[in-house]
Image (cartoon, rainbow, N blue to C red; front, side):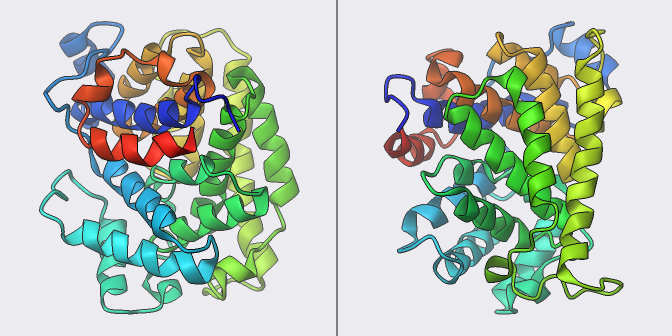
Length: 333
């Protein structure tokens, strides 16, 4: 276990919410508009009391509660609880933060009792698959269980293999950072993990999800997802080898609307600002793409690396859902 004084699990979960809150007002703005509004450094202060978050944090909380309530971390035990939590989120009056249509459509089918492999949106690899996976990375489980949980929670709504692979990579990144890997070391570790997992289809967790039009077998299905992740990780590695020009990181690794780009662009912000956690969030929020998801994932990564000390102390009392974040993350520290 990580020493409780570091509080890396809390740092990661709160960091996700902080990034989400900072990126929410900038999501549909150009970089020029963001700079005019917040200055060259981007947004660095929470606004509101509480400071509101988006569906990114709401769904991460849904995943965390499902994991907390599960009698065992098996697909049979976890899937009904994920279904219940996702459906409850979808009909909640608090679900008024421009939620993704993929999640809403899938939740509509899940609410009707459709088996999840049929309810999922098979063609979608949107970042909704991995914006909510951080709680999986904070569990003390073996890496096979971590991978299965990460892919299952993604698959309930996003059935594309890249959504599955990117979710596993995101959870794996949180795990190894929490366990002491440094941010500069992380991209290389993710490439190695992706190569090792490239032909691993997790039948016990995914069932027959792979049986989609144009797919010949489960290994080819999942390899497509890992190959897209490896391609964006190559772009990330190339970007990190160049000096930082201070511009929009989306130009290097994509705008983050899809899962693998949200992961890579958040990593770019986190690694570039490894010693300035709030700066990592601000950089993620100062993007032309899916700013709240990019900043949220950057916060999860930097928070896992540095713990709660990364963040201004008063933020923990000013962020929306602070009580839930605290209740879910503190036991993991």
